[in-house]
Image (cartoon, rainbow, N blue to C red; front, side, top):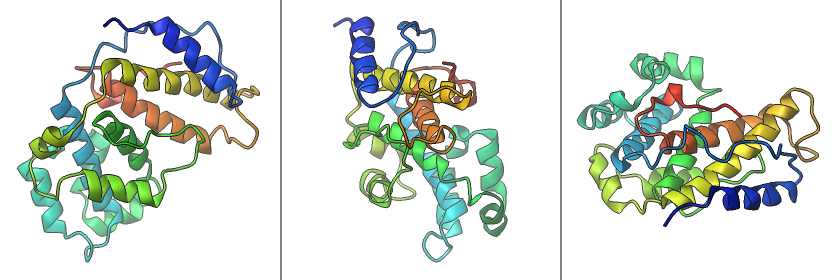
Length: 228
């Protein structure tokens, strides 16, 4: 069934407006970045790679052993699914990586939520700008993801991949919300009262990144079109 992009946009504009976001009506409904669903294996591998990077930086050795993380990455060739920046983190010794990146690695969890949702994680990433909560984090890492060292195919087989229409609907909503966020960062009154354009806006940016990438097959993570 063909996707009605204009109907989705109308619904999303109404939804966001009712929650205090002011989105320009002229934003394009058809974007070259949105080409179709990325292969499930690529989304799953990216999600598992981010889990390894996050654990490498933030988890103590007593919780997740260094050898276990390295083996998990090697067995699944997860370094191929890391960006150059993430690979640099992962190749640092863990105390140095923790010291340098522990204050920022939490943003990877926002990416992970979007990717997990694409693969069927039930809870949809919200638009309130609040960072991911502990319960959701644990549900993704310990409830959805395979055990460290298990193949990516385990996650692929258990995934309940969203339909293209369902994915487009949420991605478009984040795209429109991201536009309102960027307008607010430039001084506009385009976000709800109490919504911080930088701190809360960063959450919107990272969740949108995961969704747009998942709908941009063949595009590298760092080349994802996040324009608004």
